[in-house]
Length: 220
Image (cartoon, rainbow, N blue to C red; front, side):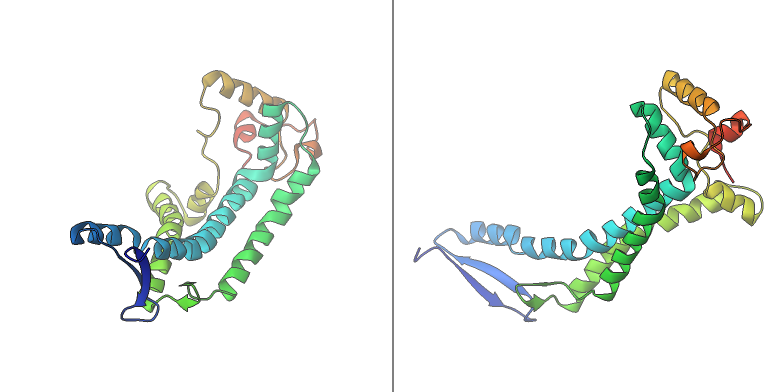
């Protein structure tokens, strides 16, 4: 233990904590070990502090909005009922429609308002390290609006309203990958048409007359 111990000291900023090990090992091996372990805990803390909070919440919020409002909770429940062969409770419909999105939005707002800079062992990271954390956050999140803008400008045509409708509607190609499953899925939708993509299938009248294209897409 006398020749192999850990010593902590600060260099530059008080937040830049470094670990060195005093031992009898050759200097070259010692430098490689230091380079491998010095920043690991600080990188982990930085990623956990920023990416595990803002990035995850924003991505989850976008996903629930896409599946609940763009694809539609009615379609989701209809697909689940086809897959499991039994009725889906109204509880899940209410949770996906009215509970989860606002709860995630409140969590995101609370996280943003209560945010403080990352730190480790009671000491805040320097400004440049905090900036790296925000870069990691926006590098993940900005891909979502960037692809939306690309799809809006390059993959759609028509007026602004037509382009927005196309961007906020499911693709006609969406569905089961295997042809036999796709046919079964399509026949199920023909047999159980939805009045609207947001309405629970149990609330749809059985006598509703719907064309195959409307049954497949159920767009507004």
